[in-house]
Image 1 (cartoon, rainbow, N blue to C red):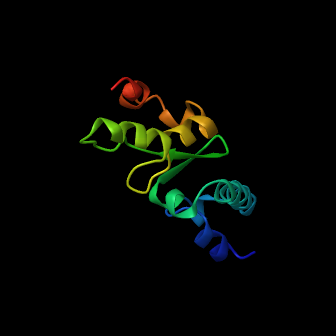
Image 2: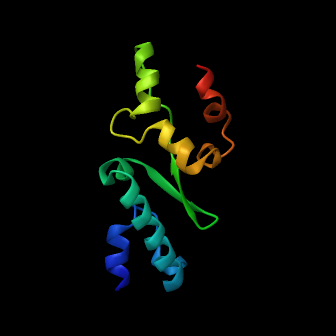
Image 3: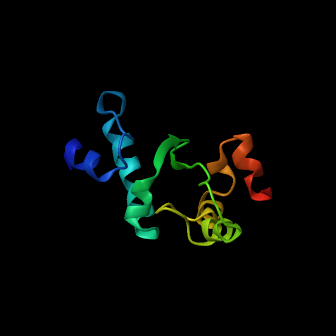
Length: 109
């Protein structure tokens, strides 16, 4: 598969061809394909992604809420087109929080 075709199906801005080998592109493509098989593609594309330890990690900031029920909605179904926090915890466990204090303690809000 040509590099251009791989880049089009991977998450935006995740791959720079001059920094990435063909084998690494293939590994990233396989991981991305697995994610698109498990989650809605539109939701995946709303996120920024980092490639860490041969895994895509979502970059996420908790959404501002105006009603207490939106906290549950964000956890259970996702807000504003993003994946649900439950999905982050289930698929990536605590890795998606990336040692950012506000993400580690947000569930206490």
